[in-house]
Image 1 (cartoon, rainbow over the protein chains, first blue to last red):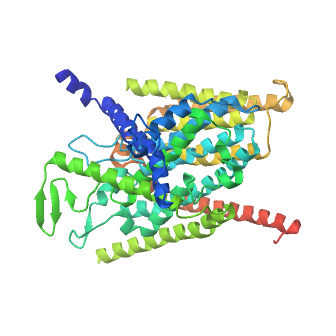
Image 2 (image 1 turned 90 degrees about the horizontal axis):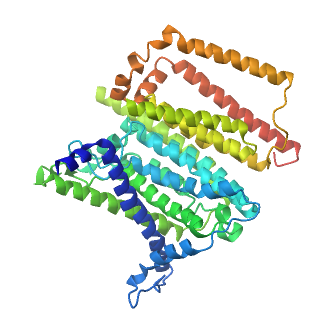
Image 3 (image 1 turned 180 degrees about the horizontal axis):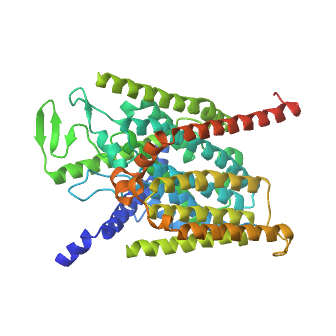
Length: 370
Length: 179
């Protein structure tokens, strides 16, 4: 028993365990379930039942078995590589797409730290900058896949993906500058802890969405464009260029692109919650229980941690739902509209947000100094 | 400390290997991807040197933005594999080799000089960086001691952007576009 404890105290072992639990137990699982839930929610929007036929005997579980059926299908499907394609790059391109949406979970916390133990893989000093750095690598998946397929439609998709993702990366970074200014930090633990402070004697939590509402809108829009979800899915636009950059892929490699798309949704949702919706915080819940108007309900530490994990997961799933429901609400933008929205509307708004935030912070400083 | 040394050697070998493959690959896309890898491994070395901020910016700007543009240009120009025979020697190349050897010997001299042996101190010491965070330290220096160079660089970038816009617009009127 003591030997086991001694191993568990080792930070490297803890990190590996956390990676296993967070990535395999939460991110992968949610991503996989989302592939089914997207079709279910879509059919609810369109007044249909959605997939419900896969069965074991008489058990269908409202379509839950389709997840297994899809997995089996793509494993056994023939994996074709088109003639004239660059085989090496064709093989590795899907993993570039997967890389970013998994790595960002390294810094997202699931609950407040208890003693020396954090519910976060690592709390690096550069925090959100790491997210920006790895999301900027995500574009390679689309570009390489489109280029190496030796297909004109795929190439068109890759060209669109590059222009779109490079542009929206700029607005993504700029939209977050306001958040960094308000908090005076880019470290995730500080950003989340600051969202558990309150206005008006503990009445309204200072969630990012209240301190930086415009930043939230810009960030969420830029993230939608970064992960090429509708209304920004011009790089794959089925009705124009078939499937865009991953058109020549089949079998498990195609599934990797598909999974990458859903993991990106989970990642975006997790990041939005962490930055703008209090992270794991439940309003008025502190480390020792609820505090509201001097009324206190004390709770044990483990229950607070469980509540926080539950809150984080619930909020994340809500934003996954929002991203998916947006797809079935707003039609695809034309490519020139995407570029115009970015450079002519989002860029000035993001810059204005930075200016106004700076002025307000300066005014507050001045006022507090007397 | 042992662990750090192992990581350093792994990333050092990988980044030098990546840099060599940029020169040795024939296909331009492979060269570009090797350069992306080199930047990635270099940023790992920056992390080992306590400068997480530089590492993140290295990935964000070089690997994430500039190299994507390189790749984009390679694809648009549809550059194919270089079919020319291997190395041929000419006077410019020999001069290049001579200059490179000169710079290398200079750099070895600087690294071996006693001034370089003192190691990081004051605001660049690992303790101080750990305490304040590398982002904060760089931000403070940038906006106090180096604020003028910082502003001048941003004006320079602004000039470059306006210049690019003007060149693009002039092309528009020449070809009878809307202008």
